[in-house]
Image 1 (cartoon, rainbow, N blue to C red):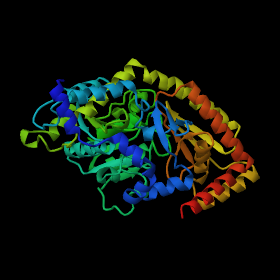
Image 2 (image 1 turned 30 degrees about the vertical axis):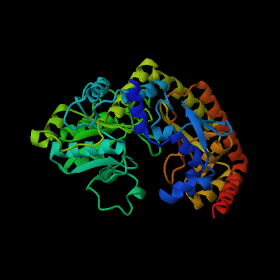
Image 3 (image 1 turned 90 degrees about the vertical axis):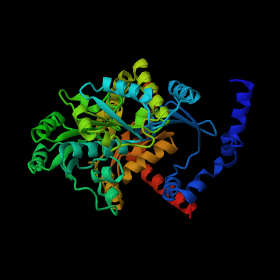
Image 4 (image 1 turned 120 degrees about the horizontal axis):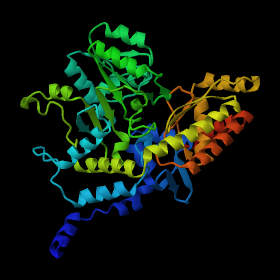
Length: 471
């Protein structure tokens, strides 16, 4: 860059200084959110004592202003597959910005989308084409539209307790009624129980079903599809000229110990696959609908239909560069192998505790997607406390475990769904044995307190104290 070009660049930058803005007003973060965004979020965070101020992050860890280290077992709801600020992804984004590409002209074909599609399809060899959008819910919306158009049928089946997104189409295939309340009417889609082939076949006999959309492992509750279900469902669907859509938005890109979760079952080849979250590298939103050639060719059947489905920011250079970098890191650093090893270690060590703690009912999942379910204890003393909590609100015990994991042990986790006594662990795929040790130690300490009776009263005090503080 010449001196003149440098001066011109500097003048165009103007007076905006992001660092100065954050230094000046960063402390207002919760007040700004309360005033201008979802006012219930900061209220909830204050009530639970989750209103932390994290200063920086790297890999699977955060640090606060005092230098305290926090272990992330949530990964931004699965977005941070490689953890935060992976150097390869950072460099790719710097490089693509510095390249000053003529991006999103809308009337040309840039190389990065084709290269990322090629890479994704190498992991999905039975599929042929990719549509890039901006999120998981957009990937699902695309799949729903493509399935309906390709089959000429109006109805999509989904599984009870499913979560596929919150835009209008994906909300129609959401298995939790709480998300739908007040937003109806939606599309004429129908729920079937996960694993129930008879229920699936009854709906298929009506001859109006375009597809079944299914998470191989449901995010809400971490329910794994029964062995053989996906293969049998696929055969039923194809026999009735309907399609199988695999929602891999959370389970895809190595989360379960294979590139896709459906690959754990031999012979499963979905007609459409939805991915997002981890493909972003945690930086630039991106979603992908991957499908068979005949489906795409039917949707985009002529030049008149060339833009019949599109996204304004779809295939943008920054998102494509991030996706390419993520897939490269997964190969170079053997991320899936780490998921298998570390995930098995974490799951087996937690499962071994079910005999030790009455309140621990089940540990399930695959790879680094693990559900810890709590249940009614055997002993009378514990059972009375459990019953009291259940009467107040189902899911309260799981929340009672999540709070001290963060406040006492600086470990961030989440309850797996509303009115569920399940904690879901979806850490960055780069966690190691030391992180597993730290989590198991902390979890045991919290469970010891729960069985001794002190945890309930501490949780109650926390809620009362925080509720008074935010009045």
